[in-house]
Length: 356
Image 1: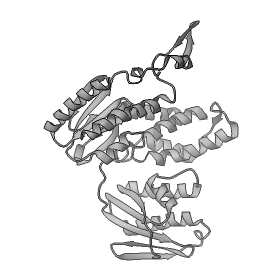
Image 2: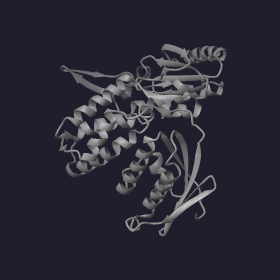
Image 3: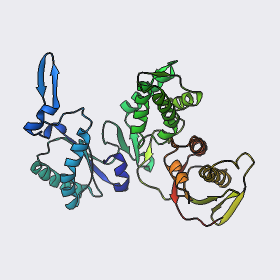
């Protein structure tokens, strides 16, 4: 499904944007008469059935998204650069004059496809892309920034969870869901909900009930406090335009030791006694941590590309942790926490590295 993450691949510096809201999006999709009984419901003793695609059913977003692929594909063949996210359409162009032409083309095409538009907004940035986030170009940084209502909702949920001795799995799932949905706009969101995911899954596997209660660990409670009080400017914004890395670090590990290279400078060493028993995936993450802390101990505000030959290491860095390995999740959390304190942003790529 397209969304704010799709903008990363399309947006360019100095882009003009048109944001279009579709009117009653799902309700424009008719349901075959012989299938309408499948969407029946009762209210105050009377039975009703939808004649159009109803809101609230789990398949509605998928169905509507697939239907919108047809007009979106047609518009792209006309040279229009756009992103469709449910009932929001974002059109981008480098020229304000050309944008007006694209707007007219869209209006004509949408009428043919019987798409009803609620309103249009044309501007540089900031521009609201949906109820969840907005695009901002303040300080020359194109970012996806969560809307104020979204921030307030997340902070409200954090306070509810933080101030409760026990919480239900359902309430914890609601907080995790909101943080997961915000991943494109709250930069380190995964760092905050990984511990919560693990504890939620453990409790759910034990009880098989979302109404069951649990007491959060100190680690999870600490992550909730950090969400409630962002620590730096990176917390509430995700970069939309990929920036060329300031430095590139290649790392590698074996059961004997680790090594790394940056700007033709090599470092490395044997494992400590406490590290020797770790799985190779964890050792690869430790190698990255040693390399980053050694090379960048006096550096700040950097975009760093990590090149590794370990898929797990690449995944745990890019996704800021995971739920499969507690050890790797802990290592990724520690690495990212250190980096964010120095305004260092990591990205990992897979590369076949020769033994360093």
